[in-house]
Length: 167
Image (tube, rainbow, N blue to C red):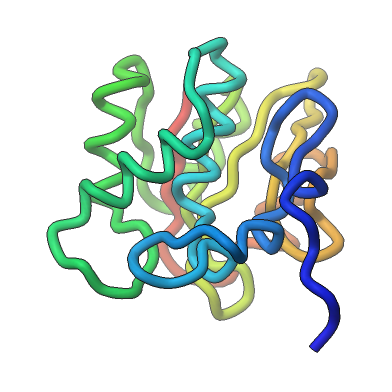
């Protein structure tokens, strides 16, 4: 096992979290956030894009406390919905690959719940051009990347349910 990445290297120059591997010293749902922190990271990044005053650690703690059971696991959709309803009430949820794709492609920013390979994952994104989106914390070697939404869906969304939470 290689050396652990420092926390500071997990952020972009603008303050977006781009690499959850750097959050090994923080816990989320009783285990290192490097293993399961994608949900709170996506929520933090969306709030940062929207100009909200929110510290990453505050987002992590609040979403962690929203889980009823104190046990290891990912961010549950019910927690993501509750958190976004509180802080981003204008968000819209679209379920199903085609609905999620259409909503995400038309949005300014959002969070997509999908499977990256075999792993359930949340990724945040922002629009940076006509058909260009910047994705944060997607996967190793795709920590901070720009691509069309169609390329993301074709290359990263494994079969299964896809949910887009968009603004």
